[in-house]
Image (tube, rainbow, N blue to C red; front, side, top):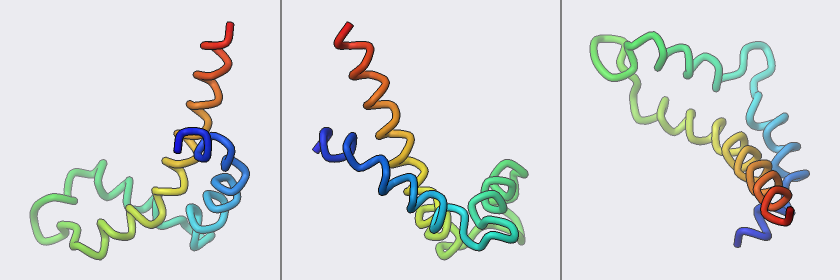
Length: 81
C-alpha cells in the first residue's frame, strides 16, 4: 500500500490541481479553512453543517494524499543514505 501511494504522486498532483482547487474563482478548500480558522465552524449560528465537513473532506483529500506521497519519497531518500 505504501509503495502504491508513493508511486501515484502524478495522479495526486493532477487531482489536487483540479478537484482540490475547484471551483477556481475561490477554491472551496480555502474558504472552509478560513471558516475553521475564524472560530465559527463549531458553534453559533454560522456553525458548519455535515455537508460543509464533507466538502472539506472532498477538496482536502487530494492534498493530503499528495503530501503523504511526497513525505514517503523524502523519507525513502533519507533512509537509503
